[in-house]
Length: 423
Image (cartoon, rainbow, N blue to C red):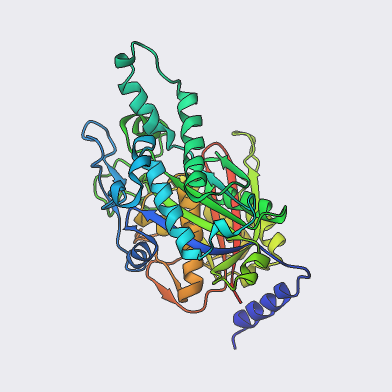
């Protein structure tokens, strides 16, 4: 056995000796993603390196400098959503409802058999309200100048997204929505874990997001981080020497998180546990202080009782913007060492999904545990200077027991989550 393997084995043994550990566990996964509708279809496409990035079809993007997106393929809401809900929901809410239904079916729990307030919903979103706002703008004149404000449109969307899941499945327990950009998918799952520790037994959580409409597109372009490359294979190259921005997409993952006790009582199949989590905020621009991502990773590992040597893979935030890529690579290298841990970014096959991206990476980590394989990053070519990473560019097979997932939201949000495979 090599010294590195011995170090990993010893560190894992030490982590298992943390007393009193009873982490929240994931028992259900539902996915709507640009390279696959449904958990298994998306996972097969991801392992095969199949991209869902293509020219925008949801609206005419020919007039804009960026014309590529990750759109969920083959989604007919009438096949997934009860007819009575169609007039009350928009595209993102329908995708979220579809993912939530798959996750609950996957977990095998019947919320009606739980105490009345024992099951709830905590989700995240960052941009889905743009579509509702777009509809309000289009209806402005037909309403004689009476319309909903932008702030009201976002509040409406976030409330409906969570509320519709709650109503459809009879989840009357704690509910909430987190809005921290791309970090939201991890933040929501962590908040779900807090609710379980307070006494809830099951929380539907995660994020499904997107804003593929003219208003949302304009907002993304104003951020200055979108790639304007028209070749889907070269538009989004995080950590690559040719990185020029990212491609946006829609979709994400909804997870069912349960207390370990509740899962044991019903002999549930468990994908893995949320062993540690941390969130930080970047210092003010121009302060010269170190960004907060490294600290978030270190805190999450500390709270999980996990040494860096126990981590089998890091799921990167993968901004696709050279300066941010370098900052993330430096944070990973500072924690683990140069090329010391496999790093992957399957979001290169979907685009960045807002709050849905972090929860989709959590789903990928959990299925990596199940199948013993690391999902690939799309080929980004030569790595950029300062990105001294062991980037996974083809599926790698082998035991996967511990994963670190990183996410950053625009404006300074950082989140890190440590997942462990089920014993």
